[in-house]
Image (cartoon, rainbow, N blue to C red):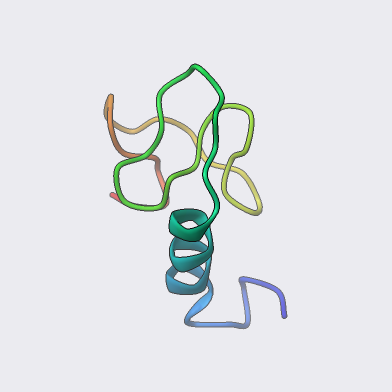
Length: 56
């Protein structure tokens, strides 16, 4: 289901991100675990040094 139609998509994405380790060297969002090499579905940007725009 598209994130636009699934109200729980971000929680599902965060649960999946926490269960899959990412070994890239860059920063990772402290809430959902996304990074520059593996951003949130639909895209995101760094809102703070430790949070992406989807998690603010």
